[in-house]
Length: 530
Ligand code: SAH
Image (tube, rainbow, N blue to C red; front, top):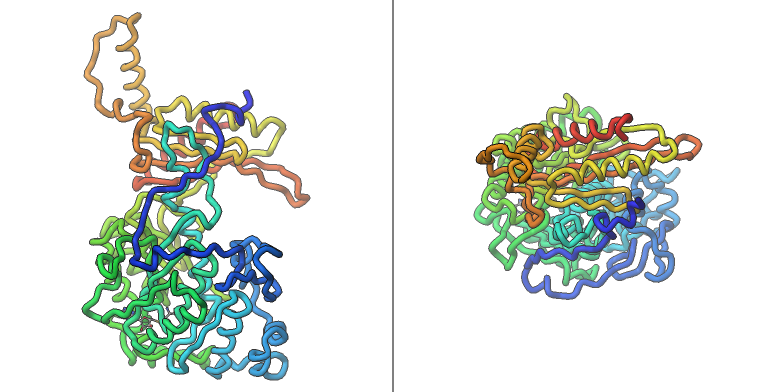
């Protein structure tokens, strides 16, 4: 049988999704589709930093941004491309990081050359290091893409839409909130340039920052996609859902004030044996808040416990791993297991951490949820969402055999939905409970005997669990969703040599279901069976 032609394993179709969010009047403004690696004005930014029109030289957007700071920027090259930067370079292309003007120019130059953005910054407010802020946006993209509720995996179970492949970036309208957006409004700017379907609300409590933030939005002509809202420090909620026409959000992000007091800020500065590596132009309102970053994020957790699924991902950057540890404990105390942690590293310099949590049932990728190896072990990490259940040398016919084994196994189970896409060697399934357990299979066999007129066994009352398996189930509510992918890897000679069966936990709150499912899969994909 040619699996690609099998009607049950049909063809891919894009599911438009049905979630509608309202962010006030700005949301109704048409969002202009920008091409890959385009700046806010719609010009694409070539890798060498020169602008091209959108139709020439389309680059793959996400790849371009992902690799942008894989190596540290070369200051002598930046100097040749930006005279304002060249003017601040010292001998041997050295930049004096203790000079606030030089640090500010580096930020402006990177934003201009790499993103096509312009900003004006006051001298007495924080000057954001671009690679670090960019890392947060890259992580959010991974987190949101890999847990999108709008993917076609959610197509009707009986409408025969398979696959669940990650869609191109622009298909999903995403609305985010940046708490404490600062004078630079850097996160909304970076997010809007990279994703034409994203829009932002940026809040702040500092009137000086707010006025610069509004100016910077206008400077980049992004008024239709970024709203700046002033809030009050202690009396307003951090996440103002229900106010300002905000009904729901895809994510919340924040780079919170790290320190508990000005004294802590000064003390930590003094403790450093070396002088600070960069001039810090932050004002106390930016750097200090009650309870420091843990206090700030704890407040977010409390608000999230009320708002729950009105926001898909609540996230924060953190300055210390110890804060991450405290906050993960707080999440676990509240029974929140769907969370993600990562670390942002620039070269071998400053390390920052990030935490995200969700009340939704979509599970994020392994790379976004367990993105680093914490000092002190893995106990901080959430459950893994991906596992390789089998790995073999790629022999002739192995792929077809495996496809058949996987599909036969899945089709023999009472799944609410199962679709296989032969082109991507990927299947997606949803199920209403553990239908592969021995107990369930025994009950099912008994029920079949009862309904078989050729047997004369007495009828028992069967538990209702047998009735929950119906193809009409709303798969969004299924307690377990998964994908199974056949991945072929290449050896050092670039020859395909291994094939792996990889299971991904897509949906649900119960890790034991994923664990037992992968156990069953491992067993059925054993070499003698496959
Ligand atoms: N997002 C910017 C600025 C971060 S500094 C960046 O990453 O560079 C922290 C910001 O949070 C400051 O602008 C400060 O004014 C703001 N802030 C402090 N308390 C706040 C609160 N309760 N609500 C909103 N913003 C707050």
